[in-house]
Image 1: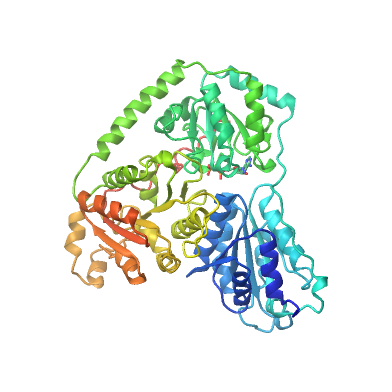
Image 2: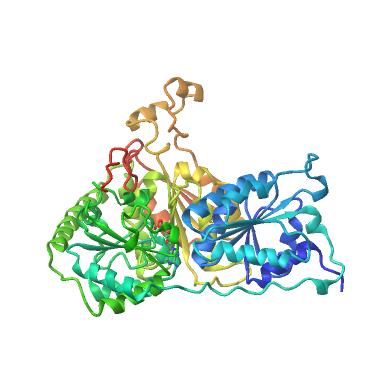
Length: 591
Ligand code: ADP
């Protein structure tokens, strides 16, 4: 038997950890690692930019509950991949980045793609290591993988010099195997604190449960649903916490969000941070007297913006919530308190307003009307209860306006720009969702969680960050359905007046510039659907509700990647102040 190379040991260590998919881009010196991995039965998904590969690997980590793996070259590959690191850390997604680097004997001499990646990434990762020998590779990969995963998830980094990748061990017996790592042990809360918190919830006049993406990641949907069903506590999902409990549940206060925040006096926060998304827990968005009970796996999170760390619980949501259900001892919140009445009145009013926006049938279409058509068509093909669709949504207006129009009934079926509000994640996330739920169509593998259609709702600006990943989707036979909501600009574009835009048609770029091209301008009526056609997919350009309905229906059934370029009203989307953004005028702290 020929002694194994470093590349083989690296690939084998990943396989031994149970890795089945690697996201990345190859080049010297990591191409050999990818080839060895493929030979060992690991699926390698090759991207067009490391940024998208990093985003994909981290989303795969979130969806599967174990670190996603990203493989890139050194130097510029690492720099591009850093976007994935930042995004994974801020979202608390588990990610293991592996990168090649220059030969160790050439460091400091201006070697090919030379970069001191360990120094660069140490402050940005939970652990950044370089194996000191071929024999230490399995151990280094195993530990970095475990650390990126256990505790609050984040990123781990392993630097792999070219000489190590190409090196050959003298005796294969000297290389240990990496052992699979079990799920992290789960912690709960001690009796005294549990009792105190149960009493506080029982004494609340206006209790509220906030459900974040930490609850989705923790796979705590069973107990969370049990808690709400047994107690009748009103709940509010965060944008990616949607689906932990079905949006259609009667205790969902999403459409009465402002009222819920303003009046809630005791707030149980399950896997969500009191950051900008939740207005830092501050008045005037929140009741100034609100008491926050944070449940989080991360000790450091407890007390941040909550006012009183004494009310925090460090523990796994799954365990803590089941303890809480026992401690509440069949107690339930009355069905007709003033709080419930206010929530119900606000829901009726807000839902009526939303319905009138949805039926505004002007042409060009409004965002709300276009989303309503897409949703109704998809609904008829795959009702939310079937959990047959994963939604990926990004772009300020697109993400914000679509969020309430597309109901989600199951956890981990909606990904968006997340905690970092990272635009450009969409196509990488869609590829990750396809890999997580569907495996490789080409190889006939089934994904870990059952087959699903991936549907992307992309603003034209957000789509542009990684549009070339449409080719990645086409190459791997991924039947992803992408809607590009095209208003010709970032946010609302550069004009409040669609007529002005139309006048600009046919003019040269210089002419347009003289006319006042704004920072938010993008090309007018760009044919994004042609990208799909160029790559072997299917494109639709739609302007009317009928065309959109048809494209949605056909696109859903299409077996190839499909881009539907949806012309919507320019200049009429919501402006910068979108729903989850904290306004600068609302900095008044309550305590
Ligand atoms: P959202 O974007 O939905 O508001 P965040 O990303 O702000 O959610 O918060 C998710 C939180 O969930 C993080 O603080 C993270 O530490 C926490 N978390 C992740 N997994 C678990 C778990 N198993 N148990 C408890 N908390 C968890």
